[in-house]
Length: 362
Ligand SMILES: [Zn+2]
Ligand SMILES: [Zn+2]
Image 1 (cartoon, rainbow, N blue to C red):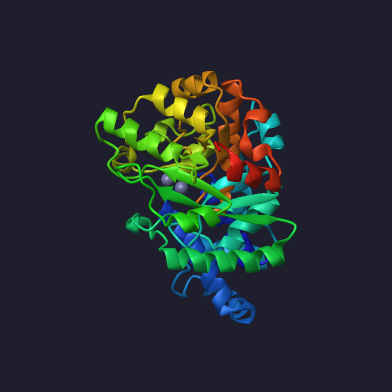
Image 2: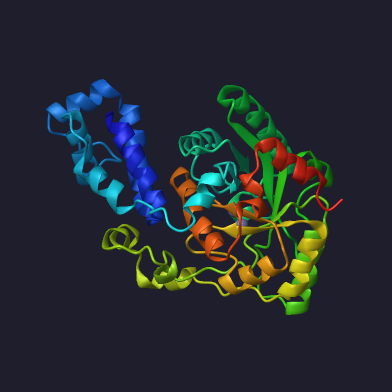
């Protein structure tokens, strides 16, 4: 194993366990430093016992590099492989039926990895496709894409698709639902995209009737295919891995209590009967968002959506390659709600998915 590959795998596994971003960044930086130094220089530093000296390397990462150079698999990595594994649960059959993921981010907006790195991770998980859904312009905090940047991204996706075939990166966006229900991107561009996820990210505390109107307006748009993380809630750290907590996972995900509290957010208030009626009317899919801090929609709303006969999309909303494995969480949730593969849009082959996205609700 190459030392940079060992560090890269550690980054992947830390992301899979949703470790604190500072920690992930430290390992990612060490990986990059090892690559920049080059094999000869890394070997020289190792021989001289000076691996911890270059900026970006420290005692832990230097130890990992040394173990790898000595021909072994670093103990840190071996433990992390075990501690962060996501068990296949009751949603195992659904997971096996999924062909891709309809909600992913890259460094073009607030993701931590390039489109190609995300795509290669998706290939590694057996996916046939990944819908790239970076943020829209007004989400400036997430470096949302202007119309020009989105067009440039479409060119990059074209080039990548030539190299990665038969895997497909489907074009998409996570478009912001503005307070009046309008969408935060030009209609001609939304029209061009394969799949559009629409989500509320701002003014989540607005009045219930206003929020209902806002969401229904977006759901009714012919451009919108999937309603993303519908309540916008964020759970406390203790609730993020239900039924899956192990001592290893807890240590891998330990976050100071004040940050846990800061990350919590109550669900937005809206009339779910009306919003789901609109989803049924326009055949807009409801996202089952797999992020451990979201787990959106909550189980009671998911049960209601099942009663309405809605379609679903089980999406990771991954901002890093390791997070693409979170689909198992959403599959368990869907299985508990009695949702079959025929109601899930991303069990379809890519062409079928795009055909549905183009024609539904018409
Ligand atoms: Zn979002
Ligand atoms: Zn997202």
